[in-house]
Amino acid sequence: MPAKRRPARAIAIASAEESSRRLIAIGINCALAAVLVAGLAIVTL
Image 1 (cartoon, rainbow, N blue to C red):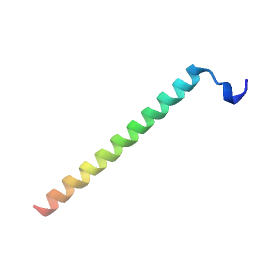
Image 2 (image 1 turned 180 degrees about the vertical axis):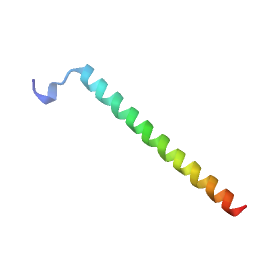
Image 3 (image 1 turned 120 degrees about the horizontal axis):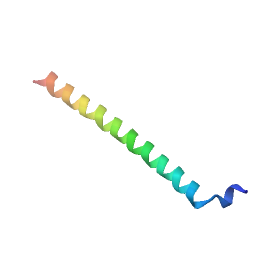
């Protein structure tokens, strides 16, 4: 089967995995930003 004619189900699964990875990365970045903001607030007080 050529790569251009992949089944729609495989494409949907791949895109779902990609979006979940992106959401996890965004969550980690938000958590790190929150920790940095909290640390700065504690240091400045």
